[in-house]
Image (cartoon, rainbow over all chains, first blue to last red; front, side):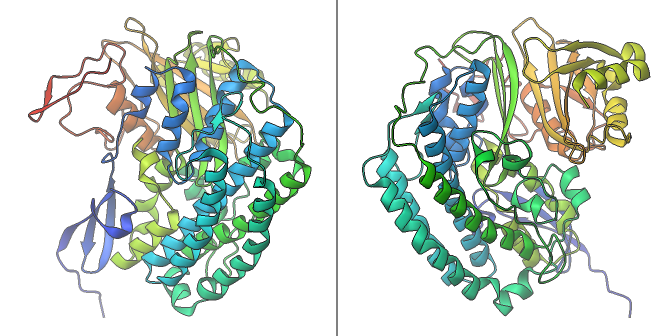
Length: 373
Length: 162
């Protein structure tokens, strides 16, 4: 029997909607229950970060970067600091590099925990969300110990760190890691293999490698499509070339390569890899070293420009910075991963039901703060 | 392939459409090309076996100061061959326009809209060029160096920066 076509209807999802992860509006064109076109409308959280940056000294921009991707503030600060340091040719003490990697990877776990938990929440699983936030609290405790803040840190400064970690930090991080490995097994038990969850996520919103690359999708969402690109590996920055870790790729274990379930599971596996990196970094962490010794008195990068990218939890975080030799940047553009990751939703979300669009959106793990900047 | 080789190759292929090769003053060696020809060049770089620049990492608008031309910067990467190139076009302040590459790299769709939104650069051939971050009825282009915000927006006073 031929499928009956109903009259097309435009449905507004958001800006206030629990599953849009912030203030995002999706204009859905629907044919009955089937979505035929998705137009994301963004900008509700625009705080003119780039305009502000043009009026601030370099070190004053750091706290602003954290407010863009507020679930991965350490990652944003790290990327920004490295970009300016590369322009100025600053060599960092070993202890700073190790501590930065530890914080960046802890942040990756914390961010993925939110991603995994809220994805479950989006498709109706409430308990895993509580589990994930339980572990995230432990990481936030560690961040609070080091920086005094739980969400927005202003901890990684250009040329070093705001201050060294307090006594007991290393032991407490080891404690967290020991407990964490078992916790990942719990998520797998409660969510990964859950029949209802698989039904909701597997085979839904399949993204082919070509589509992913063409739309500039990066990070776990790209690797879920089977593309082996992780900037920590392809162009190692900081000291990532010293650690032994795997790059999990989507394999289509429950359906097709690049479906929503793969995007979820790659994140679960990445948390384990991050834990591996943190453990190695803690083992090798030099005891001596002044974390403030390389912080320049005056931050005036030489005239010129740079595009520097690093692997944030959500993907490729790039900073394009133009300097004219003064203490204020002429231009600072943040290439935020979620901006490009969201733009693909029309391509992979067409032809699915409205409830599937919510699952696809959840699997992309967006943060509106960095999309709108 | 090194940036120098890519420049040599593009020069012999596109001739006077390729203006210069900049290595000084940038940490990413840059090829400056003609604004009207950018789409052809990007397509060639994407499709040719030697280059395979299939990933557009970033696209940024730029305004150096109140008298200079606008520029648009393209950072390209090849996921297969793992090499990079940066392209740059200049466009006049009075009539800022360049060719769109949104149909070649879909990443450029939103990035070009952003550059249009904040700098007012027209990307010819873009499928749906409209504001993306600012409100549709916002006046002016905020990241231009000579931008002066209006006093009111829909009856609300706009605070001055500095």
